[in-house]
Amino acid sequence: MILTVTLNPALDKIIILENLKLGKLNRVKETDILAGGKGINVSEVLTRLKIENQALGIIGGNNGRIISSMLENKGVNSNFIWSDFETRQNLKIKEKFTNRETEINESGKVSEKDINDFLKTFNKAVEKNKTVVLSGSLPDGIEKNIYAKLIEKAKEKNAKIILDSSGDAFKLALKKEPYLVKPNLEEIENLLGRKISSNQDLKKGAKYLLDQGVQVVMISLGDKGALIASAEEGYRIYTPQVKISQTTVGAGDTMVAGLAAEIDKKESLKDTGIFAAALATAFVESGSIAKIDEEIIERIKNSIKVEKIY
Image (cartoon, rainbow, N blue to C red):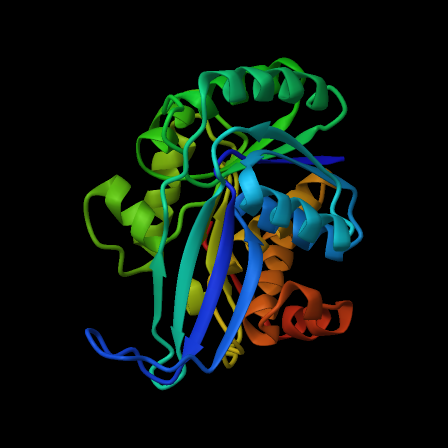
């Protein structure tokens, strides 16, 4: 079974309008409210794929109750620590005219008691789960080495850890050698301190992370596909161009769900990369996790081109 961790969940409000006019009145065309947080998104995708999983996290207040209710209605198996702090709310603004997306995210906050209660729950849950997804930002009130601590505990139970984070939390966690990391292009460029413009650059970026003790690297490249690599082999995955149905926000989490599903089934590196990339593309095309189905995934998989880099 797969365990996902979301330490900083959010209630995501998506606003769709023709064109954002700064400093002026804007008329909203459509709105949607979703349970957010990267690990929660992963669990929603896995549940849609009928893959057994459990979502762990910390929630609180009215926003937390809404998130819990939403996930229950979708059949997502969750186990949340309840905090006295209100779960944050994020605003996503999607402009139809330009396809531009603007995110306004709150920081979130937890207490020391919340963290201690979560660690107890995590220690029990990791006993039954051999694939663990650690993803997303950290709320105020939590140390930046929390992912590093969770990796240590999970590895004691021989679990494979997928890490999808950034900044100091990512750098500290990297020292504990997670099984897989999934940086995007901007994140890998920040790590290397330079721009990436070729497959050889991508290979060097992957090698940098593999040299840190990571066993698998998946670099997501948006509509340009991805690169997946281990020490022994690497593949450049070219995904088909699809029309953005609603938003690209969440595509990376959908990719992580695909990675977790294939790793948990012990699939090959190449097949893992293809499935994860196809799943993310299916999300972008369909516009919703709820609309993803096997037919869409298979069609996109058959349109993917793969180049062996080494």
